[in-house]
Length: 205
Length: 205
DNA sequence: CCCGCGACCGACCAGGCGTCCGGTAAACAG
DNA sequence: CTGTTTACCGGACGCCTGGTCGGTCGCGGG
Image (cartoon, rainbow over all chains, first blue to last red; front, side, top):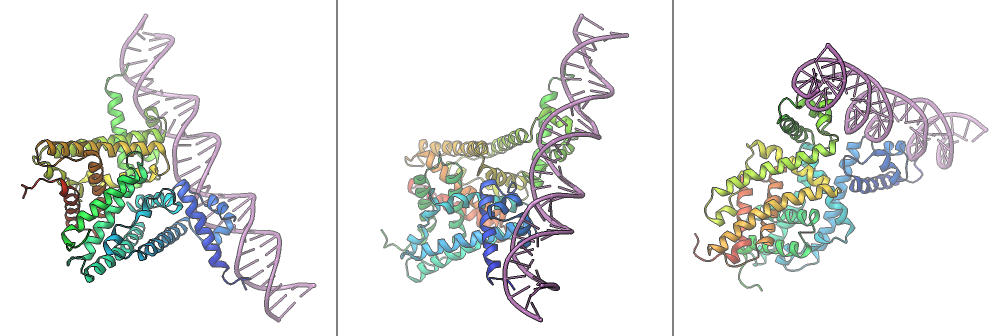
């Protein structure tokens, strides 16, 4: 019966995009369904037709957002050869001109803030972290197989690297006046090199 | 006129404590003035007598909370002798049995989440960071003067260390299933040792 | 031509919120 | 004793929100 079979998918995407935009602007709590509907060129009723509750919409929105960012990050990592350079190569996380970055961090903070009390959001956050950990673990394993890193447990290391990234990125984003991009790049380079130093086989620059 | 001159101070503290408790339980957005008043054994009107608006109350509450935590951390650092041990010594940040910790992190996440859009909260966050940076900088300077660390710029290093702490603590708190206390302690020890390694003069353990 | 149905609309509702305000009782001052 | 100020009460007000629901429209089938 639907005139276009993919209509539902299109509309959902349209709504989720609008939701992400609105949440990013107003914040998780202050983003209203009416506003999201408007941003999606739709009425409240139309929105309700696709997402019964605010919670449902927001969870899907966060999931979609993380998926999108992660796809992008993975693409970027694929373009680098050397495993160590890969570990150090997520510079786009500190690009204030990048729209994904600009509205991505507030979204992440919102998710963390909710996750502090809400178990469902906690798994959302965990999933997000796990994606990163998988990616970083793969890079580490790659390096071990290539004989660049001596044997180490990839997962805890990946988790540490990922946490360091997030810590530094948080400072850079929220207090840029005192945490320049240069500071951020240098700090995470040094921290990650420091973490990996014991496992780097000595024929590097 | 007031029966007890210090009454105002007492009441404000009482309200702020109640506010912190409530915010920590319910979250920044969902904590209501009525609830806070109740938690402070007071009516809504009584609360309004001391804090005109919710915003005003919350800002003071956050400030007070940060002050309190920081005082405590500084006390703990003062009990350690060796500068390097001091840098590595904030283990109480990863004590899940500590009430300050348990409700401190959600509060911090809330503040960050709001700070993502609200400049006033951003300076609140900055102030908090600066306190840490000051403390860590002092420790680094101490180490330089004692001849344990070779000359380095204390502030950027302090900011890096502090960011690493926060990154790892965040993971530990929000996804403890995959980020044990042991992982957290080991990770931040390694990361900070890695950051400081180039500046440690070789007569340590 | 009409029927049914899915997409979508927008007015509406119940409840919750921060803030305001009229009131009260106690503690002084004169 | 009276007037005034302070600390506090708790209901009222006005606004806003998420969710609902009756209704419209256009299309495809019969």
